[in-house]
Image: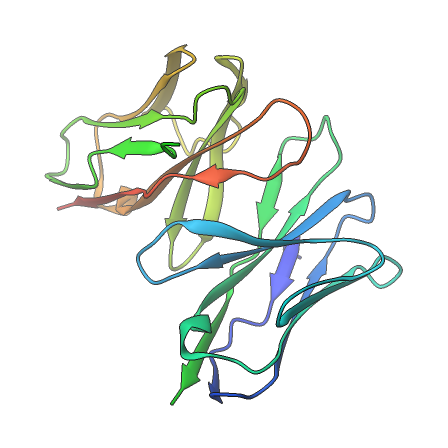
Length: 112
Length: 114
């Protein structure tokens, strides 16, 4: 089982739609959680951190369910510029062999 | 502020040749990471340094790969000899020593081995 699993998509949605991405992680001791965004042929960039209480940044809402080891990202009123690949990222406990583990990404295309 | 700088941005080489990728982290960042990204395997951590010291190189695929960080502002990833299966985008990332875990990525080097 992969450490971080995401639905690869692609998700094709019309402008203005609401879209949700899900992610599961295997290590119950994971400590930090993020969503990164990667545009085509560009580097990954931090979109937002994910906190236990859930957090919102404009049209973006991230949720964490530690019991189910599940992370979600909700995008409301999607824009053409939201088209990208969204990477779910988990930090495993310190002392392990990895710092951040990246999911394989979910591809989103917002259509006019 | 300048972000993470990588060079070259594109590299095309022939099988068997030596390839050297370069990275300049963000000034003041204590951690430096080398990743490889392919369609098949996604983003994989190859090696990371803390204060110029290699901490974990278990992601380095084989002995053909080596990485160095001679000082706080420069790191190299070398492949010798290169093989077609090494074709990928190689990213360098850095982060501060304390505080958030956020890593800042460079623009990547797109390597093609013919």
